Length: 263
Image (cartoon, rainbow, N blue to C red):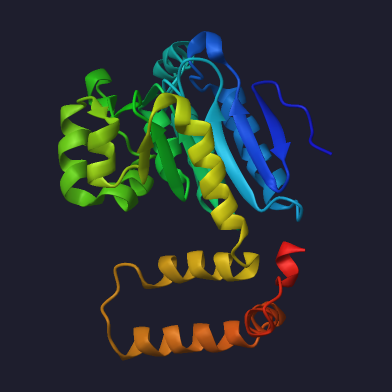
């Protein structure tokens, strides 16, 4: 049973769970409570075997406007130790979202600013409506997008990050698609259908293989293609082929039946 949260709600449709950030009055800007709730929700859903795909979305007009102004005001009065503890909590939440063992989709509409861009980038993939706009706007406030940087860099690479981190410019949905921040842009009224279609595609895959594929990407990204990488990839596929899931998947294909994970 899904637990109750102060700043978000979780809905379920079959094997898909959607985490709805639910602070529409402040455009889903995050504060200490939303950060804590998101971290706990990620842990809850990651441990739920009945959930195959997790969608992150925002209630109201916007996905997330980034940091709550009152939270920023409180943080500006913190000393270094308090700021470090605060930043570590935010970093831990993003890591929990990024490290989920099942596929995650950001459903982005309206504004995804500052940390909102970070949330979208921390998900495995993102689908945006045509009205979506992104920005790493931190330099306008004299700070930097430090905690979200690993996820944004993973999505867009250093060249694009050099520009958007320093310019703080608004990035349209079309440009976000071009630089790799999102994987798909659709009409506003087609967003839910597009997310559902992607979720259905993901559910067709084997869950253990999907986690192994995610681990594979993390293991080989940025490494030279040398003997060590070749050996590691060979060992990874050999281990995967030996799993019951793989044996059932191959047998199901040959026998023209559904594999066990779809039953």
